[in-house]
Image (tube, rainbow, N blue to C red):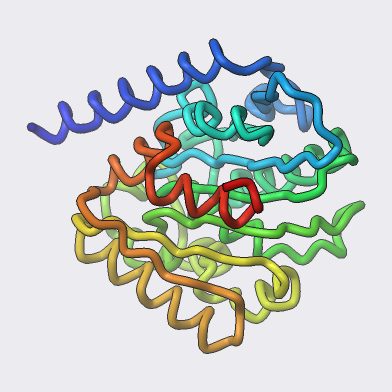
Length: 269
């Protein structure tokens, strides 16, 4: 397939999964977490009431300039069956949003989720590609500046980018307009000491696709090694027979390796 067709197929898969999720779960759509137009969440709620509520926040990818929460509910399909709440986060993609704003938005979305769902027994993060970068930035937050310190039990960082410097000179940066200073302060690979302070009890899974491009594979491997060397609770998953897109699309399936791993982490398998 051509590059355009690959992206179209990816969007179609995510949309179909999200439509399926909206048909099997109760939904609360466009729940505000801030003042901005783009600062909204979609919540996918199981039909079964449980006191032991696990919640997964999903942060979408798209190189910080494509996709939205509207295609981001797909992983609720297998999870709501197990009593897990899924929250898809919207944020202001470029050119409307810049990197500092997006990072601030996802951090505030987590605070808002905890305030709205104070009865959750386990909070988990999952992000894909640019969303894995944003999820890693959430793990690296100095929460003293916020009203609350989230206890994030687990994080799935799927085919992510953890060092933004290599993309400064690429087309990806055209709408983002990042300077080197902005890239450095928003690179999780440079913030590992803060990540360790904020998220030492979090179980982190760095997942990469067998057929991810060399730069994606390198970034995941290096970030994993840095976290491991810091003594964090981290594992690396090299997911066979997947590429940069299918690695996340398959989370619509309860039998998929990463879905099972996430459920196991929650004690829901």
